[in-house]
Amino acid sequence: MILGIEGKWALVCAASKGLGKGCAQALVAEGVNVVITARGADALEATAAELRALNGGRVVAVAGDITTPEGRTAALAACPQVDILVNNAGGPPPGDFRDWERDAWIKAIDANMLTPIELIKATVDGMAARGFGRVVNITSGAVKAPIDMLGLSNGARSGLTGFVAGLARQGRLASANVTINNLLPGVFDTDRLRTTMQGVASKSGQSLDAVLDKRRATVPAARFGTAAEFGAVCAFMCSAHAGYLTGQNILLDGGAFPGAF
Image 1 (cartoon, rainbow, N blue to C red):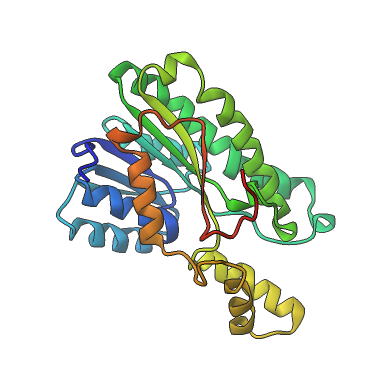
Image 2 (image 1 turned 45 degrees about the vertical axis):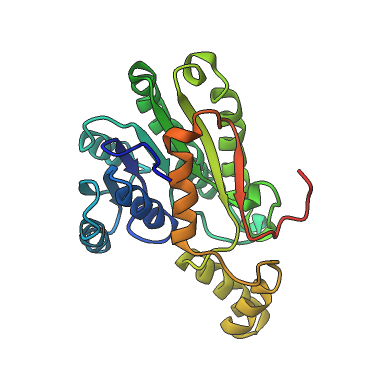
């Protein structure tokens, strides 16, 4: 399928590895020009080199912290126009809510709710004026099925979900071919997963491999997802064919969520 987005400009956040990198790879392969950002300059430049080798769209790397005003300003300045915005930021650490002080909550909300909102605010009016825009927020399957140890993430990402539900349905955006959706990963083979599972292993006295095997067994697909397949779904949501898809939470979890809706 030709996605119809060749030559568009995308800003993909936290794209040096994991799911953000998977999204950037899929977009570049479709001929999209991509600005990628992440805090680690070395990892970001290595990813940029990989993406350029795809011989697709242009790739611009901007090292910085997207959760800060300075980081957002630098990333946006590097993008001639933002036709596609993929919001992503590292999730807050797992733990017990009894141990989290106010600062931990503010940091989680700032990174996983307010930063995406700030980037949406900076880009959607321009998208509407041009008659095309796609915003994909990478959130979490925990928005639908909360995980007790991920309370910081559950709270912050649920706040973003509620905000998007209202904004995406504003007529002046939806009627201008600007869509805003959330892409909810289940368990994917990423550094984030292994960090979380290492915490479980340490707390329970099990090996990391044992904990991973147990987690894998909860997925009907009997495996963890890959960044490449996550990126492929993201690219479709950003495509010319997805103009009637807005305000939705697309769950990609190998069938793990047990509900009907």
